[in-house]
Amino acid sequence: MKNIVIILIMLFVNSFASNKESLMNDIKSLIQKEEYLAIAINKYILQTGELPLKDKKFDFTLLEKKNYIDSNFNKISPITNKEIVVNFDKDTN
Image (cartoon, rainbow, N blue to C red; front, side):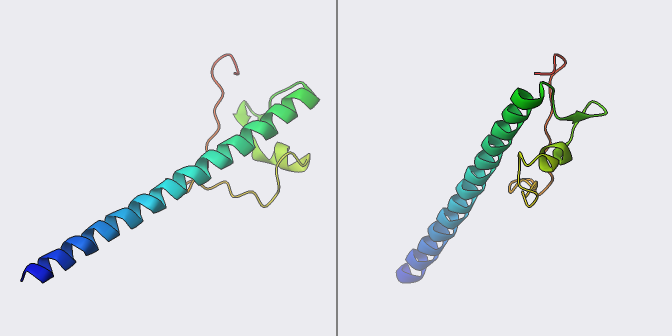
């Protein structure tokens, strides 16, 4: 009985560690995507003098057309499984 309890505890701990590692990898991936987008947006602003906006909303296609980001860039957040949303504040910062 003691061995069964020890095995169950080890399986639980192993499962928890695996989930934690997966979450950390998702967070790392999201941070890398955010950094990549920030660099692309900064380059776009420096070279065009304007924000990549269309109808006052961020537009990925403006960055893709001018090759600031790869057209195969995965816009899905690994944490929410939804498309990444980029917002500028009221002062367009």
